Length: 351
Ligand SMILES: Nc1ncnc2c1ncn2[C@@H]1O[C@H](COP(=O)(O)OP(=O)(O)OP(=O)(O)O)[C@@H](O)[C@H]1O
Ligand SMILES: [Mg+2]
Image (cartoon, rainbow, N blue to C red; front, side, top):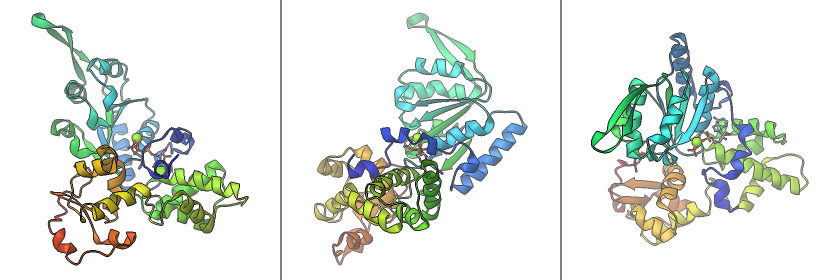
């Protein structure tokens, strides 16, 4: 595992081993208080009416708990959840079985819903609006379709790129929740909870040290906790302290803000090769030899959040803070150079 695999919010095989760490009930879900409170109300109200929940769209950067929340919703309402993901649904036929098997109030969870093929998306419209399917039974000049009704259910969609959803799909959701990066105190709570489950000894300082380098992301916090646990065990220490946590994370190459080698490389390339920007994502992806999607989904959101990176209509720019962090002196005319930094495109869901 490279340092980037540890710090990347990307799902990894290893995360499967973390399933026991995943909260099962909303009451165990730490942070995102407003989202949880609102979902609680939606659940209670729908339950009172014996209706399924309205369709819910969860959006936000990877590793913040969208999938976890979808499962919590099913557990809270005592219904089944069927899980699928946008890119594997290639044709409408792939959805028919899933939809017709749903029972009253069940949840259909579609991950990466922004990657649903258009034909599948259009097939889904009547299903979510009227709980009906238009199934084509013959092709060609005699094409005929029949209308099948299905049980009222709840669609929960998850996406890291709300901006890529088509308007008609977006409009069919009744409830929208954005998950944002977690503050260190909440991450420290998540780390303590996970340490308890993993039976690792950790003091307040250790939890705080790990939380500060977790880029606001529970998935990364859990992964770092595991790596630090290995380090402490090999060193023969009994518990994770501020000191041992920091030593372990330095050794992995994660700096005190949680940035790893790829983050630093991205920012250095903007500063050195492109004079601080603006530079387009295509050029950055080519220079760094990393896929655009990886940069947009996994790397940029946190750099935007901490004010290291700016997005303008003309491309990415390095902001003053990152010059200091990486030991460069910012150009005197930095403000003018990034003068077009209008913040307009700073919503990280929109690219
Ligand atoms: N609020 C939370 N409290 C405790 N643990 C959490 C919380 N949110 C997420 N986690 C942990 O972080 C891991 C990642 O969460 P999850 O898989 O739900 O993220 P996601 O938003 O679906 O990510 P992706 O966009 O990559 O699918 C989970 O396995 C869970 O253990
Ligand atoms: Mg997920």
